[in-house]
Length: 382
Image (tube, rainbow, N blue to C red):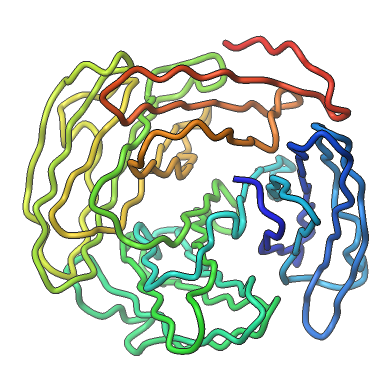
């Protein structure tokens, strides 16, 4: 949903480039203010976005002589939709691109839970908290292993205090050669809950193989996961889906999953008890004995859970590339429009559009594609 203010975590300490994409759904031009907060510095600039248009450009307000880690705030007098792409150059001279929606879904509710954290075996997880509010936030982060026990790297809760516009980052690492899967709970003690996410990275020595972002969200009792592990024009390698379910409460949860194909026809059901404070990961094949599938998985549970849905694709080198696809929470049907800030195609980039209808009646959708000046554009959907 378009917002009048959205905050993003930005990190260019290792030479990353940041592209900001802003779209204007209104029929009049809008002036957008960009504020970069890092350390004791604040840098400000303005850009204009045409009526019904968009602007995509590298953020040039970073000081080239400084290693910047901070918050990029995008604000406007009328709602705009925005996203940030971080371009990381690997040791191979290849570029990995990671997309972020920032605090666009932030509402201040808590506690927040981040499932699917990984450390060890080449994995590293950076928990990132930003304060998009106008008052101080404080609280603590607790990390649990798959059985609800403490983690060696975080045997005690990690406390945080974040002033408006600031960022707090904490890294979860392990020296062991086998990956350990954990989950984090963010409990506010002062002010609202922050906007938070986990940046999960997979490295082979110093070579970055993949990087994805798992948003921290409140727990839910129903959700829909998009599933697509079939080969396509843009994804040739073997792909699989991994689901993580974390139960941060003291009550065991009944987890019920239903598999549907892309036409909405039921293909299978699965049910199991998830003990209190436990987290479990299952692949699509383990749950439904299928590997290549396009459709959805519906979740119902009697106890609210934290969820993660990752697609792991093997590239031409046989290396895993992980991407968090997330999930959709069921809601009442609405006629309001949604804005997707950027459709990227070409120069090694591609965009997948996934539409899920969680209701019991057919839904009609009109997709309109526009150029930078608001002009209609024809798009070939493959």
